[in-house]
Image (cartoon, rainbow, N blue to C red; front, side, top):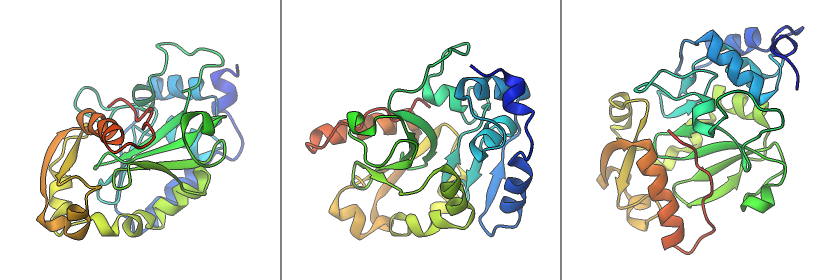
Length: 241
């Protein structure tokens, strides 16, 4: 297990160019302030260096809110009981770093406000009913109630976010007042939609759906129940918020 100095003290860290990319992007975003000690503890468990974009985000942020807060990218530290949780909390990290420990299905890196989940596949995605290659980004869609292969790695996924990929990806599920509703959310809350997002009624007219803010954990639990109700593969680990 590499010590924290090996992970932090590297040549060509990603953070400077990553912040430049976000700063020059048209994509609305907010970088949340880090707690340095907690960020370093999270980085120690993940065992990636600050040369990688994943390591840079863990080490230097408490998370990043992208696309007017629609997508919440997890950082190395969180914001307490009412703030954005840390990557460690979402993924159930051990209280202290354990050599060789990894989230069994893969590392959850972000949620969207509808309870969609972005994760990096673990070493055996097929054992967890997930598509894609080990280390690739997959997305659990609340529209299809299935995991979908994004066909990109973490660095490509970040570029996709910075370049406005989320705006196109979510175009069909947005409604006229979504920005105001997202702005009113707590960072541990999401938006439930009725009829459910996977229903024909919702997909035909999102503006006509009934929506309310509820704890994100409740939404993720509803997703798991919907998979069972619809006879789909189990959702598996969707994170703890």
